[in-house]
Image (cartoon, rainbow, N blue to C red):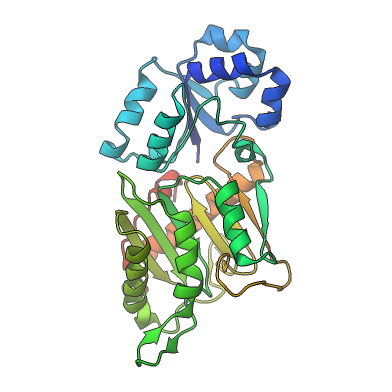
Length: 336
């Protein structure tokens, strides 16, 4: 799967004019540069060859030349053609902060200008960052929101134990504690308030019984409407057996995958529930940005494998083992 980065020449000229080469090195991890990305840029061949640092960032044959209006045309058509590649691309633009923010808020893509790179330098570091679940939940939420500025338009959640518990409340209604305690707070932290494109959500989890899929789907749908009334969303819920192995990976671990970031946890995705401190073994989770440059190839390979595994599983899911829609634009980025 190729990451696409749209890089306007004006972005680089502004970055170079206002930062020393060492300053840029501090912000951008050059070791991996854009070697695994397809860079589409309006920078000329001469400009690339004359700028030693830009020549490193845009490696030989890893870019495509475009005319000066191409990137703007691509941005202008984002909510019209809903191209999966472009809705999962990174945009490094010669535009104002307001213009970049508008693009992020409307389309759920990452849009940077030369001034915001320093503020989000964590996006280009191979190790991403860690969130220690031993910290009180309210502080975890604040840390997450501050460190992970995460425009996104698609999401995959894999947690086999998220929905397996069920209870009967005082009114005799069957409820699933994982929705109220874990999933609602997690989605509230991640989902954008609204988008001009449809948000894609895929959830894979065990259920107490296969036939409960539709009931749980409806409860999650109501949960989403409660916290995001204005967000257009396509949602699919898929049933899996505990420890299910589907060709590539086991679905034992917990993962969150979006078009901009990935979260891994061996110890559950109860990131923001109100149970206070969590003191289980290995309570830290890792958050990385595998589709952005500066990240290790290992993260990208793992990201690709998980998406491919989920794509295979969902495409083969039979009636009764899923409810809602099977599509997710992230699936378009890997070959089955």
